[in-house]
Length: 504
Image (cartoon, rainbow, N blue to C red; front, side, top):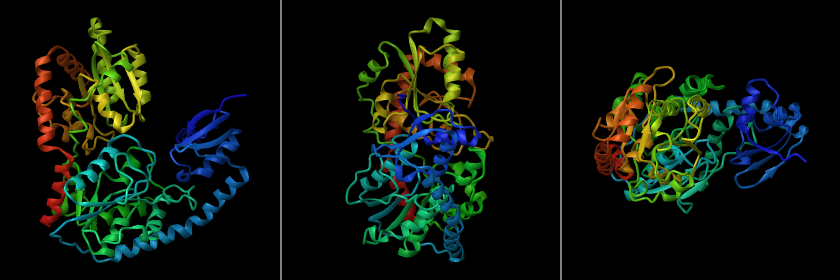
């Protein structure tokens, strides 16, 4: 009997988009949550046509089988329901478009209704996890009663009387791209009885694709609405994913609705502020607030001996990266620079190592570089690790690297990498690209060595410089930790948002 191979729904969809039959014949499809699988019946129909035997399993060990008849019936039902459901959401959006814009002032702040409406499920690590945890705990550290409404459980956020899970339903139009995101607005409105009875001082929402619930609550309660904007989903779909959204026009309208009606828009970089101003958003409502760190969690006092033993890193000088392997993270550039260092200094083989923690779209490029330079014995690919394990992996490194590169379309780098502040807080020497906010936060040869984005030769030289110069390593490490504690804690981050909100 053939043992089923474990695959993800994303692997199957990738094959579907390439218009190829799925090659494996006996699989288990592993997903974070069986109740929130987009294109569920479409995937099943594709697998039936491909002649694949399959079952579903999620992170809670729930399993599910299906039949061809059920999958086809659900798929056809979703197509017929699509227009009606789409019109229902469109009517609400049009009503909001006609709503006169009002901005509310505030003097005393004691409570916040925090909305996390992303349709990302089972996310255990990465920047979004740190940011959510940082904001929520930061508000609470500033004595703000923070009630959280979330589409999923959140790492580091207690499940208590201040946390309400409202899990999206994918039973209607779950096979139509973006429709579950749009219909979640209606579901949240129907779940108002689950919200805290007390009127909040303000609404805070991490803006997500197609969601306007924060705006809806603003006018229900007549309180300020703070929209955390981390970039345009419409732009990201086209520029990073290579295709427009199916409901592109409606998604754009919802995005602009949030931006025009928000009393405060919190962005993490000056580049994002410039982008919003170019789209007609008033500068006086935009607050630039870079990301932060919990210095008690990301601390130089962490014992990393277990990680170093696990990966045979004892007596080795370790360069490290932790984060997503994405189109602008530059992990393939770092890997090439490390390969060149070993090529130029072969006597370092066995003495240095590269620890890459994470996963993502560019992993294949990283693996190709590893093979090109034959450095398999010197590079550790740990894969994704739980958020709470991140500090231990960083502590196992001697130098931390943030090798970000320009966006693929050469637009300005608009992010605020959380790894930057976590690196600083670990009191480790840093090498980073001199790219927008990284070059604004870090000072060359004081808190980091800054290199030209994508310049492999400069990065190679910097790797070697820090290997040979212990005095520089120690000085930069101490200064970086001091800067993190004095300027970039999550408590300070959220206090700045509160101060800006009061100033209006």
